[in-house]
Length: 315
Image (cartoon, rainbow, N blue to C red; front, side):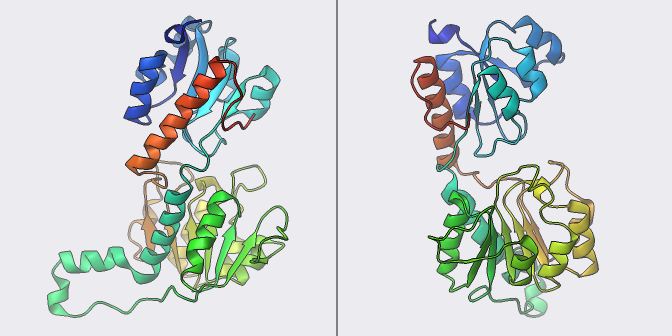
């Protein structure tokens, strides 16, 4: 089959470079442009051989069942929680993602969020712009160097965060499914114990049923009124109502959030809090990294249709 006759479904707008390259190589179908998706999928059910999605919309069981010729799902994301992996395995569908290429950007942003929350850079910027500096000096803030940092999930990004945190002379602890004997950082057998021994808690583990709401009231209370939560994983890692109430009530010192439970909806109670930094899920959001991610999606599709091994397989 000629590649330009291979139907590739793109579930939502993601990246202009990716979209252009897909259109050059394949028969690209844009799901977000149609009103009746069920009718559209039924009309193209025998011509769609690949699905390209991201951390918002990818391939649930319903979509997979609707596309009997589907061979591969390529996620424009390191996460694959929006893909029904069990259904993919059942149908013999390959699944890929984009690890490694976004590691540095996401880890960099974790450090940025920590600094913004502790040093109140966003608030101090507004202080200058509003003319308040002419009337007095800005408040004193909190030092980052030397703070105890706990990391939930010591995979690629978690290790990259830890490496950067070391430069700030911070003691590092971690929680993961299993202890990593080769790692020099202190292991804690529960998230609550890690939180109780951390000034800053960074969430960067995969989203699974086990890690859904891994940050709950007990963990937040263990982190305490001087503690800071940084979430660069997924919104569903955090029990959002509990987080909001802890911040409003002063039971948690602050938070830096790049992800939310019901994106793009964000709890309005957070908007008036100066101890919270809110970002619109931009962890990998640099021109360079998004291009690398797009190229990896394309490369996985190309090797699949050439009957070669996938470059970054999940399934």
